[in-house]
Image (cartoon, rainbow, N blue to C red):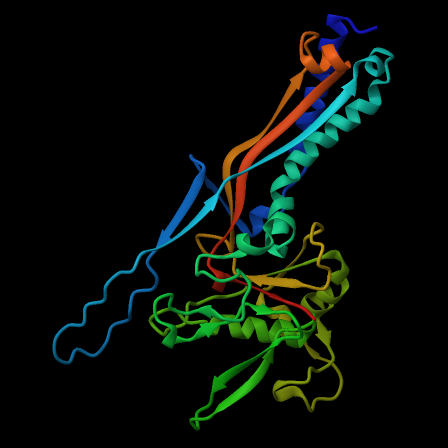
Amino acid sequence: MITPANLRLFVTNANVRMGQAYKAKVPLWPMFATEEPVSGRYWTSGWTGQLQKMRVWLGRRATHESYPQTYTVEMLPFENSLSIDRFDLDDAIIPIYYRQLEQLAEKGAMNKDFQLRNYIEGTGLYAGGRQIGPDGVNQFSTSHPVDFYDSSKGSYINDFTGGGQAVTYKTASGGTTSITVGGAISPAAIATISEYMPTIQGEDGEALGVRPDTLMHAPILLTEVDLVLKAMFFAPPSWGTITGQVGSADNVLRMRGITPVMNEYLSLGTTFYMFDTKRGIKPWYWLNREEVRTVPRLSEEDPGVYDDHKFQWGQWARGAPACGFSWLFARSGP
């Protein structure tokens, strides 16, 4: 029989267990996303692009005007709710509901990982327009503008799905050579992306200094990624100066310091992501308007209890994922 005393005991124990469950769920998102506190309904980021480099001083000075750019994201509300039948609780089926309340707390702790996963993969709510990044194109694209205001400076790629992309490099003779970058997981795909990203240029025509240090993948790619990035040796690849070597060679990819990270939440199993996490900001953002809160409705006068004999626990939070600078990250796959 429910009494005020044993209901208080149940709620106290539930709160303790929920708090423990919430803290025990270690989030993955801080490895690749920067948390930014937000105080209103919208978050606006501003930047001015790269300043031009110094030039030989011939004639008058050439003054470069600053062109401010902005990127705005709207905060989103999230909720989760659980009800427990008062009569079931009255009949002392208590252990089942402790587990459910712990799961409610865990789902709250995992929300940022879920939302960032959906945002990166472009699924559900985040398909279409919400994928547009600060430079006005999809966060993953084969044609990111180097200069938002001057298309003559060309573009760069951070989407190597579909088997990879042909990238043209200049040669010393004045000609060009084309190399397929990325594609399905392989030593060549990882090597070519890690070699291409440092060549991405800013508005001044100089490299931005990107150094991909992390490779994020779904569980289905765990063995392949470990073999490529952790094995001491592997058979010689089909590019470079060691193509004629017989037998295995030292695994140079292992020496590049690219850390493999398995993200159990990813649903696009054959797609992998490479990014630079060593800068002041990470490749993505979590814009935090309001942390997860859980409020119980247990009073006998609450409509849910009075009308439907349901005790209720309601969670809510507010925030949104957002795209950082697209030259900090890339995706690849078949």
